[in-house]
Amino acid sequence: MNYCKKCVMPDTKPGLKFDTSGVCFACINAEKKTKINWQKRNKLLHKICNEIRGKNKNGYDCVVPVSGGKDSMYQTYMMSKIYNLKVLAVSVPQHCQTEEGIENLNSLVTNLNVDLIKVTIRHKTHKKLRLIGLKEMGNPSYSEHKSVFAGVTRVALNFKVPLVVWGEDIGVEFGGNVDKKSSKEGLADDLINNDLFADVSFSEFVKNRIPKNELYFYNHPDIKEFKNHKVKTIYLSHFHNWDGYKNFKLAMKFGFTGRKKGPLSGNILNYDNIDEKLCEMHIWIKMLKYGFWRPTDQSCYHIWNRRMTREEGVENVLKKQYEFPYEYLKDFLDYHSLKEGEFMDELENWRNKDIWVKKNRKWRLKNEIS
Ligand SMILES: [Zn+2]
Image (tube, rainbow, N blue to C red; front, side, top):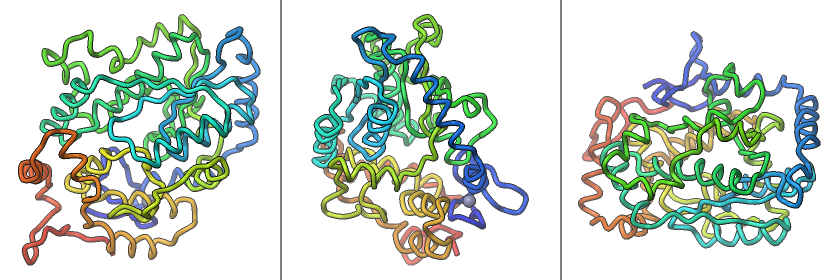
């Protein structure tokens, strides 16, 4: 396990490449972003919006997926106020929403003056899929990602909305392939195959386990259906210089609140993944598998945007990385009907012994960042 020389990301991050001098592609992409002609891309988005505005007669021009986080607020603001589209906000809320997440979603509807549709997946199916994901892949949120993409796009198709505006192209922002077709045009068509960190395809995952009639909001509509209905899906981050911290500042103006009790264990920010409770444990499993989680991700984000030095990032990581996310442990156990001991044993199955070692009866990374 080695770390990037410019930020604090380790080379265990799936899909992240490094150049020969030991700098990660996320850092290289962050540098490239400063040279992009954003004005030109901004004009391009105006052109796309001008072409579709009002085409859906009395219907909506644009679907914006929202959750109750800062980015939801930013995307909705941009598309409704700056690009002047009639926005339909669509939420596929996860089942353990936080108080702040619910309040933020209400503020979004009230203060940005848009309609909101919620797609709520039946509990039994959701819980079963999460448990299979946890036990077989160490990835309890696997099916959730599918339901968000599928739920949002199905609503867009049903309401004949010509444009779906996703936020951040994670593949580009976090060091993936910047030369893929979608990154040139900002198209989000690749979300259809976006099985985040997946070892198996979703169809294999659910085969003979979940009846087909329970999977409508998990299965993304066929790409041909999109083309037939002339639905375009794009990433806003392709057209505007995406910066979560700036989104947070803007969202505050429209009533967004961060976590009232301050940052969760392991976190340095109080506004990251504010909307629900089950994700935190999912991210902790990332720490067991790959040796990094929240403090690394959050420090990197500030380093890439030149608000933090690498030294400060290293300090954050060393201080925070072993903090267990106990705050939502009980919610996690209750939701999945798991006993604490049983769950702790399950977690140990995902600890990667190549990178972890026991020192003085405590698990520590063999190669800590310095
Ligand atoms: Zn880096």
